[in-house]
Length: 383
Image (cartoon, rainbow, N blue to C red):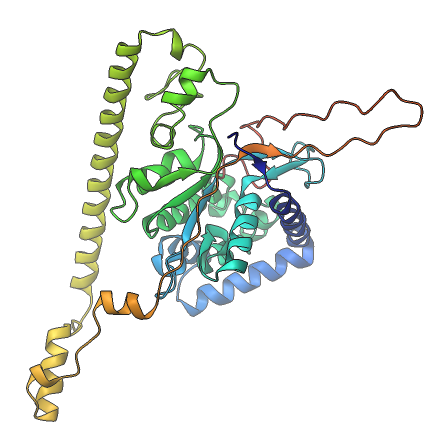
């Protein structure tokens, strides 16, 4: 059975979400809009006792902003780049382009309509919504914040989104869905999200699923052996000069035994690199927490100390204290919904072509457009 294109209800909602966001971005670029954003950020930063730039950077690292509610375990969606669409807003190259962000959000929205709390995207979390509402991809907003002289650059914006994307991937659990055909080496998906999901013990390589099938132009052998979710989550297909590259066109020309051995070697190399990266990051976080604890006085009482104090005050032994429900009991009381992972062709169902009077018949329906991984409407290489 062939894989179906992206459903029409997803398409319609995604286009609407994209155009609504484009309208909000236009307001943010206006003199009034950017003044309001700057004032809001200054007020929020002052409340935290931080400069605006440090306040935004702290937001991107805070797991609370991207952690699901305690009684839910949604399927987390990730995305990268997008696809041409005639009804989508124009990007910086004046082309009608629909980010996969909005396809992911449309899917998440419809899943949550069926079962609340079953799906999410970064931009629909509290932290993602707050960062998105700053419109840091807009040059006018960056200038209003102080511009390059104060460190508010497009590269800084990209790093902010990369950091919160990594934080989001760290907090994901269970199966996740990636709205892309594969990860381009210039993308946040390739450089930050997939490595984090791979080493996240609550996700792992086996739980990374792509919403789109492997590119149809790839040869059959490539699609079968390299088009798997696991392979696409580890390899790259756009930059021959970088590590872990596979040429989809020439892949079938290799000896089957040799190419299988080469793939296994690549997978082992990717895993080793990502484990080393994860260990280094964990060591940095541990060192940071140790430093913070040393600077904090007095030390917070431990749970055991608090229970001992409570027992002393009530005159009851600790064994008589009210038992706390176990994680298992909480999960039984609050079943955790999750959304099923879709699998589609990249593209939309071709629309019927009207027949002109006197014509011999309908024109051929256009094929779903191929993705252009160098184009994006919300910022270069954001996803």
